[in-house]
Amino acid sequence: MTLIPRFARLALIVCAVLLGACKPASEAPRAMVANAQASASHPDDYRETSPGKPGGTLRLSTSSDTTTLDLHSISHGNTQWLGRILFDCLVYQDEQGNITPWLAKSWDISPDGKTYTFHLRDDVTYSDGEKFNARAVQLNLQHMRDPATKSPLAAAYIAPYVDGRVVDEYTFEAHLREPYSPFLDVLAQSYLSMLSPRQIEQAPKSIAEPPIGTGPFVLESYTRDQGLNFVKRKGYHWAPAVTGHQGEAYLDRLEVSIVPEAMIRFSALESGQSDFTVDAPTQNAKAIRLNPDLHIRSLIRKGNPFRSLTFNLETFPFQELAVRRAVTQAIDRDGLAWIAGFGEYQPKSDFLASNTRFYDPAFKDVLNYDVTEANRLLDSAGWTQRDAQGYRVKDGKRLAAELLTYETGAYPSSIAVAIQADLKKVGFQLSIDLAPLAKVLEKRYAGQFQVIAAGYWHTNTPDGLYILYHSQSISTPSFIGQNIGSFRDEPLDRALTAARLTTDPVELQKLYSIAQQRLVENVPSAPVYESHVLVAYRDAVKGLIYDTSHNTPIFTTVWLDQEAQ
Image (cartoon, rainbow, N blue to C red):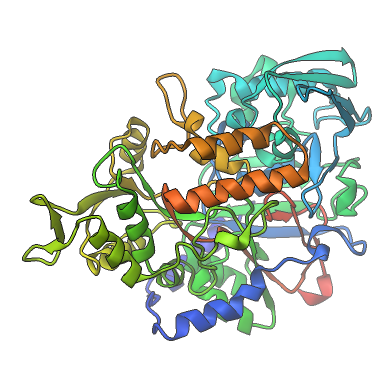
């Protein structure tokens, strides 16, 4: 049974409650400084420190449905923690970003960097009894690359993969067309989980529901837009060694309810009708912290921070670097972080998450909020005249653009309105096209926009910069890329390409530093704050650890303290 009926009753109680989204400007910076410590991680966040007690059902809420459990075919954020419930990966990262064994016991890399030989565990089975082996790896990599899968993420992450060879039952050889140093890193992510080879071969559509995996839980039921139930997988004993956990999960059951309304998720948690939410409402964070029965944690996703805007460099007025930079520096990041995160989000003005390997803090202040500098840049670019409405004009043309966006919890329309107000102060007219998601996607991939609401693109490696900003990531008629603004910069391309060809950490730091510098100098988008994972739970929930690739919860180690309930 799911929690939907209980949440539905709660909705009648809280539907009339109105939450004020505004906060005095003087309070926002203090709150953000105070809560910044909540984003700091600790080594104990990533490994079990003591055994837990078996038994019990964890009642969990989330804000949205993935609509499918074929993890290779989606890029939904919930994939990051759902994948660790149902599936396992070939390898795992430790908290320093080093690659460690999981379903692969070890691996060899050829001198030319183009052949990876994986030596697999021989004691892993899928929940239907099928063996995990080299053939399973081969079929999974094929499934990620199969055009029929329509993978928006996994396929891009293994783009250099050509084919593979089954050496023997538990040895698999992967062939790449070129050296690709992030290969092992991306294989550690939930999006690249090892799905059932039988389903891939015989009934690929059935992976959507119900999928078969090797993970610590088995799907019992799934009702779209309502909830999912999982039961413990008996005999599971192959969790990554660095998590410190041995054997089966402690919980007997996981009951996941899909609850879009933030206030209902909070009220259910507060009243004890749920135990855990993976989407802690930022507007209720203060109340959660003041409640002795509740806990809240905020950690930063690796990879790319949240971007407020991505500019189309092939359209007016964003061909001009001065305009892109001025717009970016005219945006009040503290204000936007407050609107979206109520003080829970750390403002950000550079292009790599601060906890990502090879992050260089040298460029973190280059694009800071500075209205005076924004005005100077626009003046220097010849936008010196103003019309009767106060907007800048040059050669009889107004400095203006239309923002393409859609309403979403991660990017509410209030964000767009706030940016519009910020830009008006420097004489830039921003109109807002609030369109249905399908229309936004159609225009996005056709390049039919001036500036678009961006969001975040998560990965556990700085190669995320290649995915978003390398010229090879620009869409073509046969390729859907993520460089949607058609940004081209040869020095950036050279650095990111070279980073894929080396494993030398000294050289990688140099190359990724060059890339980060080129991005703050050329401004293809406007970073605004770190991408945060916020979870909240009741005091009875113990043993929580986080996945090192995603900084999302792992439920294998979670247990319930019956005395605290």
